[in-house]
Length: 111
Image (cartoon, rainbow, N blue to C red; front, side):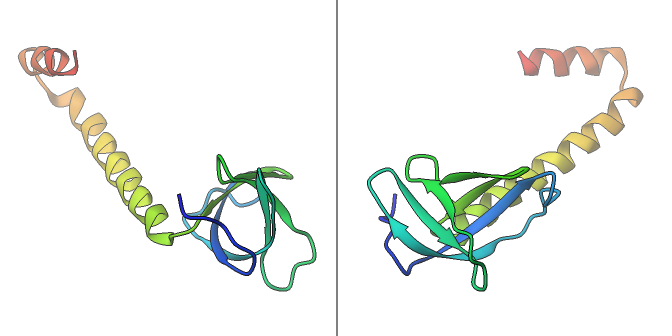
């Protein structure tokens, strides 16, 4: 994991009631660093969020914030989530139309 330093920009994803878990990142600037955590906030905000070095997460009111030092890590994971969701939906839509033999084969594959 990349070392966090004061002045560094981290990219934060909000997940929870307030943000509706949108696939977007917000730039936060690191303001303080200590042994177990770091503090960061978006430009124009006074309140800092406390992020754990270990989990890269902060618990805010009604949401969980996850910080990334490289935004591409988030976007790669988001792409995988989207592909899995699409495949799952396609499979669920197709299942009612499959015959018994095909369903048995699928069951064996899943074991």
